Length: 308
Image 1 (cartoon, rainbow, N blue to C red):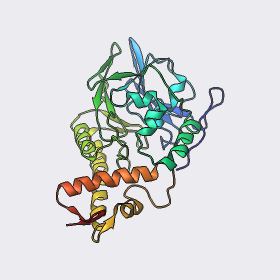
Image 2 (tube, rainbow, N blue to C red):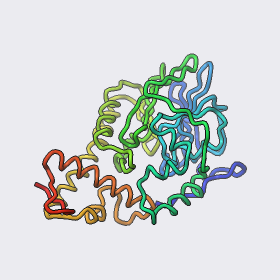
Image 3 (cartoon, rainbow, N blue to C red):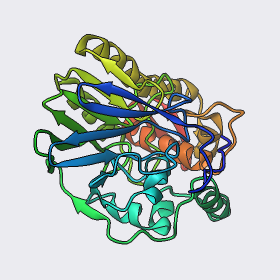
Image 4 (cartoon, helix red, strand yellow):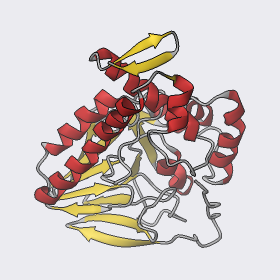
């Protein structure tokens, strides 16, 4: 998946952003719709402060004079715009170390030694990430940002990463879903700290929250109304089970782990990027563990798996 070189502080961005308003919540929407590596950042302007959530690569400045920045989780596309902000930066305790350290961030991807250099180069060159970002403040689930006439409450939604979070913004009724992004591509859970079971639980949790708007960092942007959201969320959730079903079908005859990875549960065969094999390895591992746990798959012989 090729990624562009990010803008410098003095040059205009190649993918500018536009403001979209939902009540008093502003979404800084990337011109390409938030397709990776870009995304849609959220701004909450209160009577006593301004919060920015997930400053994306599309931002070439701090456009709002932020008093605080919240990072929903430790992935490069959600922190690429941080270089333009001087405000205090917050992230869930489980992801804060990776937001503050390139080394910790990369370690969380579970890369093989021959994949590390390419990934490191991409994060520095394409996303402009520094080696260290001191002072990232760890927070717990339920943390609130009191902005005067607005309250932003952090909701822990693990699965994508261990510390992945959403945010409920009141009184507007805007639920920011971060990377529960409702895309047809489906959920991503390819990190060392990812979990299929946690992701399913997090999807079910946001499905129970009644909001007026549901905002995603990528692609879909903002969905209006719970009915449409529920339809999109159900289709998104089903992608997890579809991958699992395809794996079971593939295991009609014994397969090695390497054969499962090469078969690809997530990416199409033509996609080539430093992280692809790591994501496929982790995804295959998680689904095999689930299927073995429920007796749908077993290890036919050492290192070879088949469906029951």
